[in-house]
Image (cartoon, rainbow, N blue to C red; front, side, top):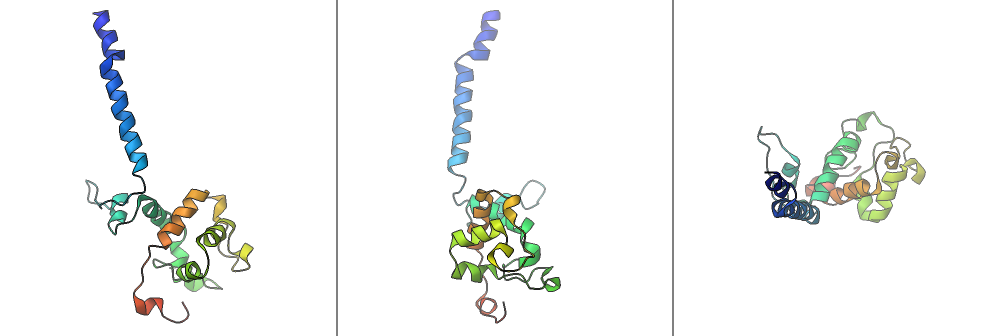
Length: 159
């Protein structure tokens, strides 16, 4: 009996389980930023996969979650600087898509990291580099590049 128990604990079956487990983890890591389909969890709530329904990569979807947590309240859902708190702020928040069109991705990421005051702009946007590492900030920039606005809104003056 002792021989059978030791075979189960350390035998070929256990090795096969370890290999399959390693393959599952490896496949998950390799495919982390690939485009995937949307889904909803068992309770009908939108999961992270729901954010992928527009064909976002995993990194872009993670950036969307971060944008919604840290940026949306001031910059708004289309990053136009018209978020919930924007009307109470002087100066108003920056149109992030306009900034992305005029500046490099690295410049925008660095502005997020060090805060807009360090760039000579509004002191109201904090240096998010104190809370977010470089990869999280990069995910936000990747998400910003996916935001599409209706033409008339994108061309509206003062935004």
